[in-house]
Image (cartoon, rainbow, N blue to C red; front, side, top):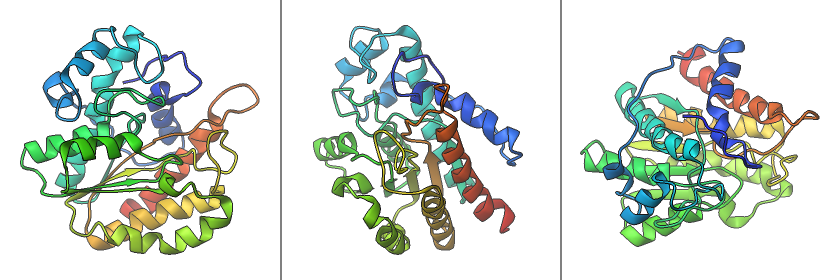
Length: 274
């Protein structure tokens, strides 16, 4: 599920690092195996020629290269998101896919470190398998989920409700107001069977590609999402989304710390509060 993408973005290599960090900090996580998606599932949301070309190394991935190890990881990355959504539907609470790199991928193009749109593939696969009637996508990555928008428009998926905080390019001065409205926003997904939540770390004020929330505000953001969804009985499948900060040695410790706080909020709602 991880790969060296040869890119500024760490997303392809984050999964094992995030999971190792969570284990090191004693979070009560249960790591499950899952089945990677196949081409037939990917083409629910993407042009078949695009899917074949990427997987065969003939079309560049979202990192702008054709590395075989990246291509080999892609079915696992989306498979993890689908598996998390299926698990959340089963346990009626929450599951996490420690992956990223979805929301800029369009119907027939890879963009912005995103190759296949695992959010849309997941929603469409769940609908195909008669597991849902409506799906919510709450995208709190710093950037607009333009690929998600494009695929929804292409396929006419009116049964998917999509909110992307990056649509309005918010700044630090808007953070408190947004947090004050967030619970109401989450409740707007009340007709959905599952909520796919992008808990982006790139919304941090110090992120080189983001910047509007502090550590404390990001933790509150995640807590509000998990608490409100739990109160509604709305299952949540969440992922890591973006995050580009590095430490003095070039490591992604600052990003892992943000993901750690997201997991801490998840545990506080779904384990400690039970």
